[in-house]
Image (cartoon, rainbow, N blue to C red; front, side, top):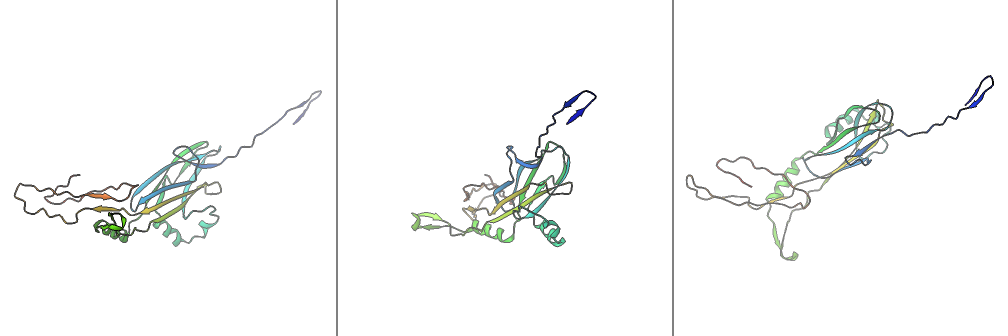
Length: 235
């Protein structure tokens, strides 16, 4: 820049630094990430993962989350190409959500986002789990005399979704958040399927020991008992 006066000639140096402004996700530990894996999850089990949507720009935005089935890297016009039936079916069958799904993110700020997953339970899953629990194990001499189950594992189901955030109605600034999970059935064995207390006098009691065994080495199983008249169950 050159400034000219009556008898003065001054030069003023003007400089600028270009900074990239963008929006991204970080996990609960503060590390930037676009992949969130729920890991193995029992069918019907609820699980949450917490992250933060970070706005590293001087502008405030209205945001809204949308989900696509599968791991997408470039949605393009995929939303506009979906029919109302496809959109409705995707919403009904979707097992992953985020909270909040829409809101406002201020400049140079972050908003906590909770991704949740809860798969649906089908009749064949219930049937297989009950059958596995009730079926006896056999003594296998070929394996050194250990008890081995004759049941085949229920085929796991892999789930994957892509969460895309729209900012002021546009998704060109959106990070593509990949969400994945693997649905599995509980593998629990019960030692006795029929309990016979025999004769029990009035005001007397009979005890019967029943053992529950979780065959999954990595994941615990929550359990409860239904109320039965005149029977008390203690753990």
